[in-house]
Every structure is written in structure tokens, then in C-alpha cells.
Length: 87
Image (cartoon, rainbow, N blue to C red; front, side, top):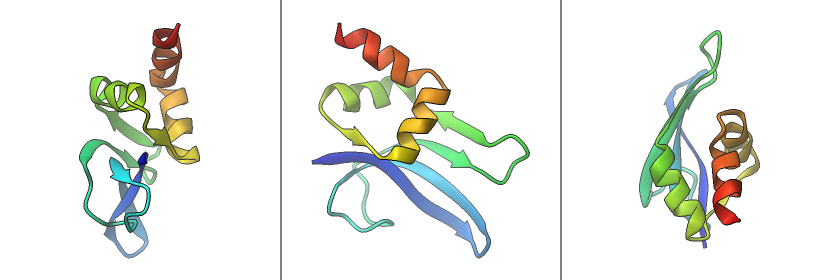
């Protein structure tokens, strides 16, 4: 099963995350199928960059987002586009 989840980057106490598509059993920082965006929680307003078309393609093919990734998708309107496309 493919999951959309975060992989940690950056140095000690300065995390930076990439949003990636990975097999569910892969380690947190293991090999990703695709890089779909980034998330920087340390900026004053958390910086999120998303590749919407690729994310929607993975969601339509059955990929499951983690709770954190789903909340980012909801905040930026990608989840609403996915729900609208299902009907």
C-alpha cells in the first residue's frame, strides 16, 4: 500500500519535512516513490509547497495520507478537489 507521508530533513532541532509517496512498510527516511512537496514548520507562518496534480493522481490511485499530511491537504484545498473529483 502506498502512503503519502512526511520524511524528515534538516539538522538537529531545525526540522524540515518533505511530503513523499512511499510504500507503507518503508522506513521513515527510506527510498521514496515520488517527492510531492515540502513543509517547513519553523517559519512564522508554516511554509507548505505542494505539487497538487501529482498528489491528486496518487490519491485517485488509492494512496492513503497520514493524519498530518491530510491536515496539510485540507488546509490548502487539495483534499476538497480530491473529494469533488470522486463524485
